[in-house]
Image 1: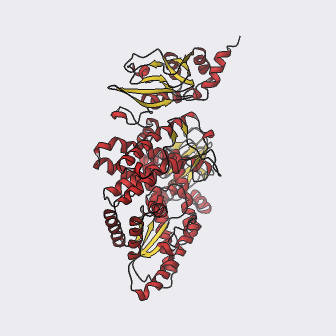
Image 2 (image 1 turned 120 degrees about the vertical axis):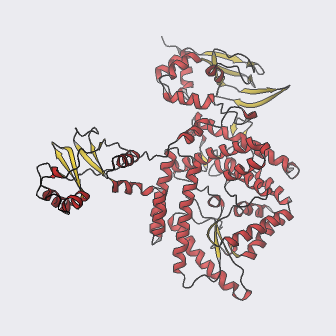
Image 3 (image 1 turned 90 degrees about the vertical axis):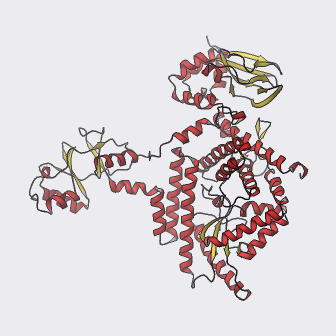
Length: 638
């Protein structure tokens, strides 16, 4: 006879981690032993310092508040809603409860035996990893009172523990050139010459027993040490090193280095006693390693035209995808992709300069703005750039600007062909507004700072993140010095920047629901950029400017610097870094998956685990906005 209640519980649990990775019989065993608990609003499930129950809990309906008692105060740490698990850590660690759990509204809970779960996860690695990473590390309290917790330890540990190895399967030649051991060296050399290959495998019963390479012919035959009429066995290297067809690039590289060889034999089962199916050469590895960043940079420097740069940029996109799949730390990925983007931009400038009829009439600098300026541009986005040239006399100003405008048009056109779309708002150096002399740029920034308006503040958030890509450093230094001088003389500008940083409220409404777009093309979708990333970016910019810190454009670098100069807020700033890393990675993953900017997320396509990851990033956003609100008295300006 069917257990209807157990089946209903089964159908509910299967939609939430870690139950979604359990085998059907494992999950049904849990569902059959669940105790259903009803709680009225205000009732406690357990209290802080209480000994752990035999069960942990998952919310079926309602909302459970988690509170930390500090003196006489009860501080709300988080709210658990449908599908959230709580009360598990003390059972795993045999410890008392660190928080109290109280029903914030009528709630229905499923109480699950931890002993049954422990028994099951012993044979389920995915469930074990989820439990260990997500619950033992207490992801819902990223930095409360320096608790022993880490924001999304599962993501963090993946990044920290990752070895920088190439895990892709190597592509080998499936038509190896062979001869028999009865063949002469001359026969083998003629085959190699006719097939235009640098090696030949000696086989017996279709199994590899040796190899001869060009090097063997040069050192042993051309020198006269051995007659060319001898059998191939006289000079072949044996035994050969064999691998199965699933060999990775990393394994191939290590094997070649270890054995000081340039070729590997690929056989059916990976041993020399099975049929030969292919050969992998050192040259093949070099070709496969074309997506190696250092190789790509070299290719960029050797590129002769824009089509070559476009091809290299496409390979960089493949490199990005591989890094994301390998869980390489996002900071490392950002640096690599930024270096490639800068190298492509520099080469585009150099190619464009060669196309100009004359040399530049004045010194100049090409600036990357926005995400590229912050070195946070991972996916291909539209262009944001500007050009500053040294001051010239009034007589030649017009012709000088025209020269740099023409140069900028050539550069932006090349970047467009490569894949970087034109900026819809024309915030590019090809626009006369953003191709100015040093004095004009100083005046422009001073106007934005001393006469703040909605438009000028918006422009400031873009142009204040400039980064020198090509040209004269001194021009940029003078421009930066002027900007900080203007800010010092009109510090209320920082308050206006602060108000702009609070335009988007925290991404969750009272910890519970994602704030989504109300209308338009992306109705009911979550704006990952505006609601999550930009508040962190804007806050870091404002705070670093307030400390008069120059040459810190990257958001993570800014928070690291802030953590040093404001030790009282160190935990918050470090949590902002953690949140930013996770959000940037997630945006990149979404962009790769959907072949777009990754900005808008359809929440209906996210599983519970993904929603938990995002929610865990939102508390630092709320708290950094509260810090800005208090520091700059922003409540009075709203």
